[in-house]
Picture 1 (cartoon, one colour):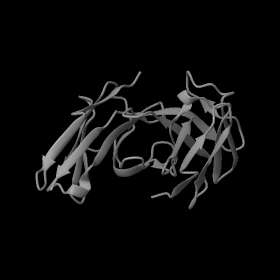
Picture 2: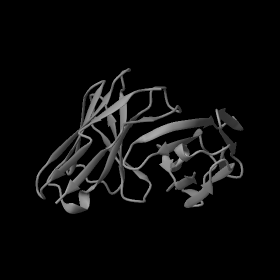
Picture 3: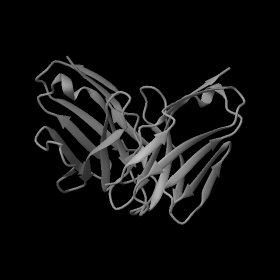
Picture 4: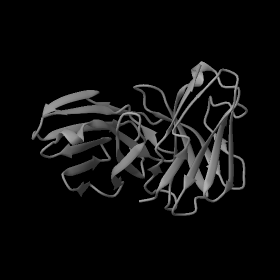
Length: 110
Length: 116
């Protein structure tokens, strides 16, 4: 059974700092991995999708990497801003529908 | 990306009543939609896969008679929580997958259900 773990559970950083969020999964037989952002009481916004054949994807200040063999992904946020404050969720797709981690709650302090 | 709407965004009801939540795919036809539930500070858990024109597929531990899913058209799926109880209070989110099989999923804004 696929399990997804995200570390840290919460993170507080000063504005402008670069940061890394970690995601690990137990079954490396995945089709893709997706990073989402969730604001309090809101739905999910898709940030980046990495197919199993890819190593990384970039969108603006966000860069996500995937090491399928070791079951790890990282989300790198450059020059963080207060508007980046949210919960970031990692989810993997294998032979089952998406399996989510519990998320990392990020606070960027101005 | 795909645009998904949900209605209502928030509902408060008394214990024992039934609540219907709608999920609409606004810009493409979805043969499959997914329903998730999220308890406070917990991850999203898949409840069921909604299939247009056929029965939904429920995940283990989800009561199909309590959570009725109807996917009557290619743009609308509904989740009805029957005889709701306080433990059903949660955040319910639907999603669609526009591509075939292993593509990106797009989520609705969610519905906050509070059962008194």
